Image 1 (spheres, rainbow over the protein chains, first blue to last red):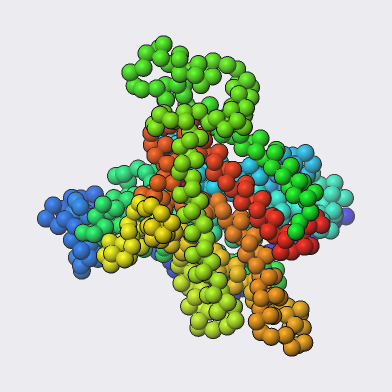
Image 2 (cartoon, one colour):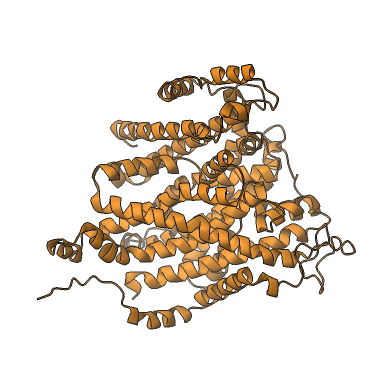
Length: 289
Length: 313
């Protein structure tokens, strides 16, 4: 005789109606379209950018937006639109790499301390208190200061701080799930702790984590471009939105488009992530089903 | 008011947290790749000079001893000497700190003035065109990095229209207010987006609550219902949110101080980083941590004053 422990995981067969509901929301459709476009631009800038982002054109220095150069040209005659498009590659990477390791580490730690509690949980609690005592940006730039500027060091610095937020969220979810009957049933059946955590508890705790991840990717772009602007993130001549904005800083009066145009890409991409995140938050909330 | 024992218990909680904070700040500089003495010394320093720096920094002692010395020095207000500015770190920070606190308070005030009335407007007409418009504008605001908002304000209101100064701090209270309006507004626009979202949601919830319906039903005037019942309850979550976003606020002032050349501790932090001035970086990181802790503490106190139920736990 076999007993199957049925945990309330959404079955694969429910994906289609879920997507149907998602695409019936205008905000999700707009967000999804923005993100699809952003990913396309990040993957194929060589096809989609009208000019070479690095080619100097000394006959077209700091020209305002026109049909030939919709975002204008910079102080070396480079096409700003093409540079903004190439920057998608760096900035979309930032959204992913600045968050994914934090997510993996945070979810693992959060799941364990949430499940076992005890002394590990107490130590974890104090660490969280200590880390959130620093303003996020201050802690990240302090770590970057020690490691040195650059993209990879920026990822390390952000991950070192950011995992705490995922861990806190996961811990709370696991603690709530742990109290359910299906978890007790798993224990009665003699399942290993690892099996209960990863096969039963965690899959039921994913919704809030995914929703937070969406918001966090938008935040990662804001943070990454801020660090780029301050000279601590991506380094010039790499095209990154914050770096592009910093390059135009000295020409705000004569060539405002150099700084203001890359910002549109930041706002648009951030908006894409938050629209999708908000729509998912509404859809995944148990009440709404 | 919250009881004395509540305050005492809350204060005691800070001690273990701060111990960890101190360990982190201590390790930050010790984990530096290579020798901090080399990083701090001039390029042409001799071995004897390096040895002197190591001795001055206490780096020739074992780590636990170094840590105890660090804690003792910090508690007595001695954060070492800045390499870049050749002066005691404590003095430098204390001289620059009021500017940043002024800027932060100014930003919060502007953010509340901006978000408060709009949240009321949006919450009293849920899903009307007004509500949708307000929410959309602030959703865009949330996607804008503070440095970008700052540059837009600087270009349009500062450089083009010449309404406000584009940098500096000024002298005297009114002059400070005038000089800091654009930097404060940059942070406020972002902060108000966060407040608006939360305040709107809690207002909708409170306006719908039974006790508000009851207050209306027993014929209390609109104003009394609003101030005594609605506002007080909606405030609890907003105060919490404001308190918890102090870190965001500090991050924002750091950026905005850089954009507008405001001589506060945020800009100093960046200058210290580019100058590899480690004692100053250490001191500033600690200062930010203290600021945030104080605000967290104040938040808890205000919260328990607004909502007596919280005092029992």
